[in-house]
Length: 489
Ligand code: ADP
Ligand code: MG
Image (cartoon, rainbow, N blue to C red; front, side, top):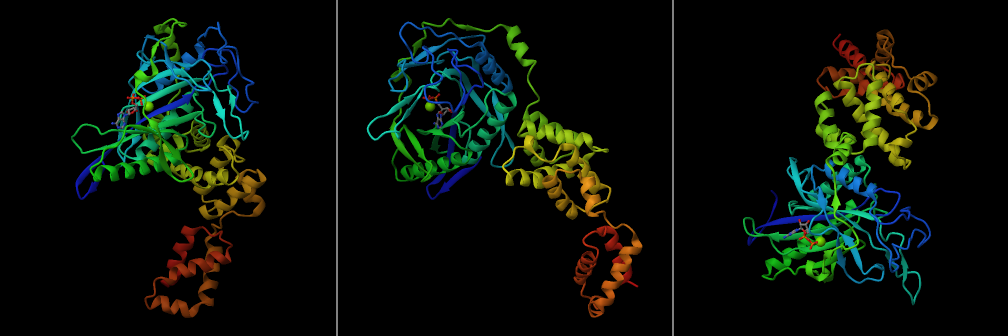
């Protein structure tokens, strides 16, 4: 548990998140309009989305399946009966005048997500519920000096609202939760987690209290839409509330907006209570009843999820948790890694660790540099595996391998071909290495004398000179052994 210590005593930070995740589906929650992103305004609008009088919603059963899959992937209880409710409020981009949501009886309850807490231990963040609801449209205020425009493309798109218990205690934990949640949803293919396009956004609830006393009053920061901002928003809120509380004031329950350009939150409105929305059962939709067979059929399609994958990589290959977690965070990265590992003639712990280093280090650096995803890598898993094996078989040193990797990327050639064309094979002939070393020692006879009178550090200097003479190709181990022998002659 991490506390904030001040002269007046300890404060504990309490954070709960409400995450809106857009369901991956071709059509909207209650209409057949497309969900395609980036089309002309109001292109994806059916009569239902525009709320014409007399239209009736029809529940998209694929979206329900997606929610069930999400619930199963997050260790939740799937409720076999749930209901839709109307959440009433007026807004220009909400033509119905209400949002169809689930309030009293959501489709999913409970569940948890495992994160690494501030002390580096595994911590379960429990979920309160997940419900499905429709998204609203979008108001555009920057298109005209005198008018506001409305785009209803988003209106009616299916969202899952994932609500956590107030169990996180720092901005870092909140960010870790969001990262893990995003990773799981992407594995499940139920939400693309694209925060730039608004497919995933979080409302962050933050309060402070004295340990052992009831929870404090929370402020809610709306629509935080980047991993980077969540920590900034939380930290700003902590210091704002701390100052109020330390001066004997009380935090107001309110909704605040995060201003990403200034890294601050500002008050938007005092918080509505549930009764302000006049929730009541949606009269146009029957109860949502789920059969066991349907739930079990979906359970059977669940892929291996990131936590299980990471544990398997740690247990099977002895990979450190840090490496295994990074590899498992994206299904595509893990698939690449396992494919490469399968190509190693000896897929043991050594190969696994070496491969992890090269994937997470040098290959990720190349992908970043060229803005490519792992699926767009110009180096295939087979070829990365080939490179690892050349290192393991002492054909090339790790240092030369770095250059080989870049040429593999630039020229899209196999590592064997690059090594052959450029003549990069290690020199493993002891006679050749000994000759190079003898030349170095003769050229630097005064340094040899210094070495022999106790200046041990010069060993590295001789190694460097001999490497230079062999264009970095001498086998480092042999070079060291022969040098020791020559110097003790
Ligand atoms: P709403 O914000 O929709 O009115 P809830 O009461 O369901 O609804 O709470 C929403 C979120 O606020 C949840 O994620 C919950 O964990 C979090 N939360 C509740 N109380 C606190 C608190 N005192 N401090 C921090 N977060 C809180
Ligand atoms: Mg809320």
